[in-house]
Amino acid sequence: MILAHSRPIHDQQLILRSDVSGMIWIMTNHHSTSQNLVYGHAQMHDCLAFADGNTAAEEAAEIRAIAAARTWGEARRIQTTHVTNPADPENYNPEEDPADEEPFDINELGSVVEGDWPPMVAERAVTLLPEELRTRFGDQQATVLNGDLLEIPLSSETELVAELRRRGYQVHRDDELINVLDGRSFSPLAD
Image (cartoon, rainbow, N blue to C red):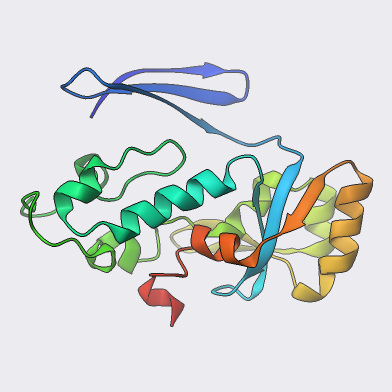
């Protein structure tokens, strides 16, 4: 893919991408202001994690599709809107680019092995939750390579969810979805 154009629109970065066939994708890279949240027990971090309820299911479908690809060609052809595709040549730098028919194993990609893809689901609360609630209920931790994450103890669930709802947020729990977003179903770090 070739980056065709990028420009800020309000709090979002609009990215227009095209490939040699002329197909164009419109993607955004933004901090969500959504008041529709999905949350759950992120098992790899043993804490509550939050995601944008408007996009979480689509993100999870993209992650599942990439993880299920059987060949490099199949993995590279998966078009994504919400997550980067780690099999896209723009997102990795292999010494030798595998042929389309070669077997694909998501756990052989450096970004997956190193825990960079998919991004930690526990980091999303840093941008999704109001600062006062992050401070009151969570413990913001800096990681060496992957940025900040917000550790919210499971014991805070009832009070935090009630406070979010009081503030007008739509909140629902879906542990499976949260763990798909965290790569739990395939990550070598999940053991």
